[in-house]
Length: 470
Picture 1 (cartoon, one colour):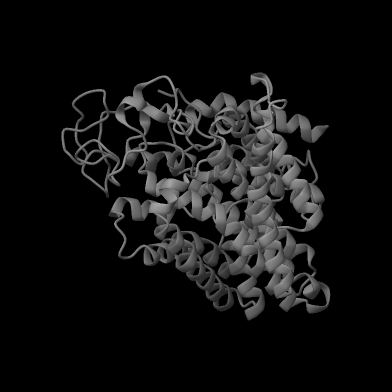
Picture 2 (cartoon, helix red, strand yellow):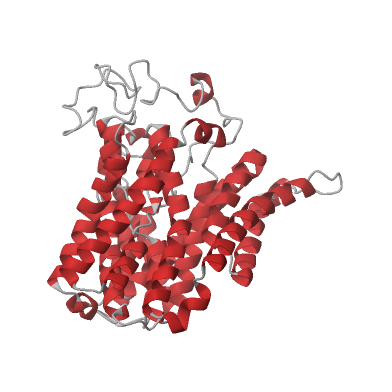
């Protein structure tokens, strides 16, 4: 019960400080991470959590599943068909480059053998949009940028798992080879994708029968039931639950916009709670002993993985695209290491491989640094796209900031500057990718668009940046 009480207190503090967090570099994610470190064995010792404990793996796994399921609902297949090349570049070129860069640095600076170095690279290559909610969750940010970050992070978690299993098997063949054959890995991926597509289609088909249908009060529980069943089926069949979650959310939003609209407030809140619980538990693992066990070379790798490897790899993958400089730099920076890396890092620790504990220490420190850096920078960078009014940040009547623009005084409350280079908008007032998400008339109406999107809760985790929605 001590853990429950600590979580309740941390949740209340986060709610009370969320208004301040929406106006500053402070973030609710950072509050839970710091709160976990404060009450863990490294400080007050109120809760005792070991890395080998199932509660660490389960909370991180559930949080990632919930986040991917709700984020998948914000993928628009119509837009994705037109703009699939950029996410494909990020996944097909940017992710392998990041994986290779982290592996090389780990081998050269930390001294791990090549197998363990590539294992660390595979664990730290996935990204998580949950720590960039002010970017991916608001319409003032160009839709192609939001889509790039969302689709990339939604798919790369599942794509990284096979490589984690392969290098685990290479490090400890006797213990893991049966789980890392090419056939079994391919089967897990196919099953995850198949279950994710089939589940919402099946439920949507059942609702076509006249005798079946949900009353309005219970409608939000329908998608929740799909998610719970899907998570259990994936666990029982060893299907890739992350691909299943993201694909199920995407298909559900496409075939039943009404279900998406009904579930969105509940889904965002549940994803927030799961995320906060996982951060609190993970924070309790961050002790002084853990940080002291990491070598100087390990700290260099942790920093360079965030500020050099990810940005450089994504910028290279976006060469030749129509993204402007502001969009490219934003996409390159926001590659936070999140719950997938936590889950995969625990697999490394629990596998009992040589250098496994040292690898987990490097992974954990990198994740902690990433959460601090990315969750604290999304609001300042979001200001470059003029999303103040949408996240409850008081508008200071300034345009884009250095280094993307010199700024200009605005002429009115519409959020447009006196210059044509509006923050996140083109000269015609549309989004900078030249295609607004909805017609102007729909933006000002009380009803959401036909697909249930952009209803003031477009993506993003609501509690992460709580503020007055306008």
